[in-house]
Length: 205
Image 1: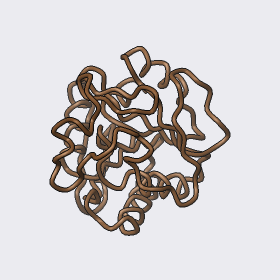
Image 2: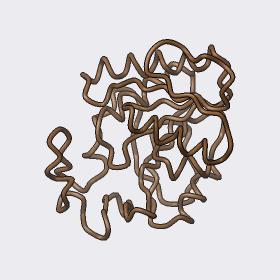
Image 3: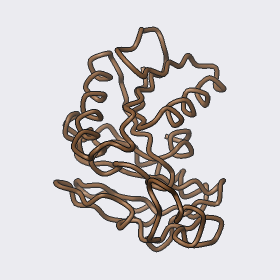
Image 4: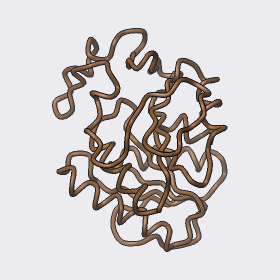
């Protein structure tokens, strides 16, 4: 079984639909435990607008639940433009599962969302110059991906060039300018690191 942790229902349902199109059985859980029998279980923690501490606790509980239910692999689904409690939730999952770090690939070049030289672009424009700057809950006020995230409390965080090897630990935000870059990052998936990001990255891991 594959386990997915999403911070809102839209993200959870998006992944469920993706899996169904591949002929697999999917279950989206918004409360309680998985019923069993699904190829993929996506837990909605409903934590995007929570206090960071509460969001981290919910993410950790979800990770442990998936592990106890037999998940062989866990993926953290994040918002493609990094809205919400991305860093606290990733850190909590890494700690709960005893992993070394996390590879975060939020960008989706098929939608014109790319990260180049540490800057987030939407259809060629810096993100803080687009409609995302006016998001009522999570305005994107900087194009710098490190500034779009909550400060990490334990893990070092860095931006990595496409295809670069992973460090010993920490959170690495992968730069993505093309679909080929996503494939290069997906090739680095391993059992010691949490894979995190959007739908496009999950589909290639």
